Each structure stands twice: as structure tokens, then as C-alpha cells.
Length: 228
Image (cartoon, helix red, strand yellow):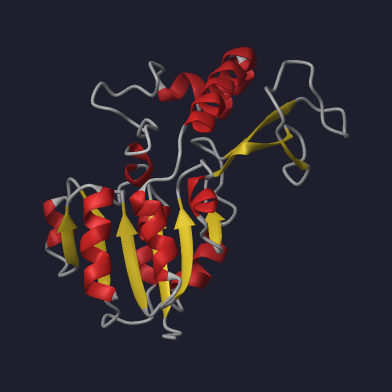
């Protein structure tokens, strides 16, 4: 078994082929909502009921989705590499596909936490409603990192990336920070970097990465042929 450490950074594009909306679709909206109205601390302060409703709907959509061949391909790679997945996604499709090492940078849709103490985290069974409180008496909210909130697990992600022997980026255009900056923490410039996305920006192509311009599912097939 090849014990080289293969680190994956995944984004919304890997879950799009499972039927989940990408973070911003072509109309600039997310399930018909402006991001500023449902994914910021200010939105939570102004209209918590609307925010809860939005995430309750997203959770129902997630329950109807299933992992696709791109998720499953990462599991296949575990037969040959020490695979670590760092995902910007809040769904659980990596876990359901069978990935064993998954770090969620932006939280998890199937968890909720106290709006006062971020360490009071619980599994979700059903919807979150106004009036549902944590053990500290504070309103429960989705355990999601909203715009304007710190990405508390970024240090852990940096540590993982800094020891990578191979780095794969899939389904993200490297425009959302701090996740996009993880590539700067590779231990040296000789680390192979593969990027799979249907729209790879020119400035990324110019970096000399192994660019696979395709959907996540088709691109994963190409990646598997290159690495296994």
C-alpha cells in the first residue's frame, strides 16, 4: 500500500451532480435567496426564522441526495493512499460515500449549536424552530460558518495540507478564502497538484497544475486513471 498522503480540497462542484445547488448559481442566488439574507450573522439577527427555514429546506434536500461517482472515487483512492478530505461543503455526502477522514471547514448541515457557545453542538433530528434552545438556554442555530464569521478549523486544515504528498482540488474555483489559500501551505513547489473543475480560471491554469477541466464525476475518472 502506498502510504503517501493525498489531501483533497472539495467544493460545491463535487456535490452538484448529486442534485445539490452550488453556492451561487448563474442567477447569483442560492435556492432563490440572496446570500446576505440567509448566511450572515446580520441575517440571523434580523430574521432568524427565515434563516432557520432556509436551512431546514436545505436539510430536506440533502436527505434526498446521494453520493455520486466523484465522492465514491475518493473512497477508491483510500485503497492506495492515506487520503484526507478537507471540504468547504456542509453536506455529508463524503461520509455517506465512505470517506474516513473528512474535515468540514464551513460546518455541517446536520448539526446545530448554541447561538451563544459554539462548542455546544448537537446532531439534528428534524427541523430547528424558533424557541428550540441549547442547554445554556440560547436559541439553537445551524452549525454553519456564515460570511463574516471565523473559519475556526482553518489551522487544522493548514496542518493537514502542509504534510501532503499529493494535493487534489475538486469542484472549487479557488475563490473562497481562507480555503483558497490552503494551497500556499504545501511543503514545497514539487508537490503534485491536480485541479478538477468545469471552469478553471486562466490564472489557475498558469500555475502549472495538472488541470482536468471537466465535471467532478468525469474528472474523477481521469484522476483515478492517473493515480491508480
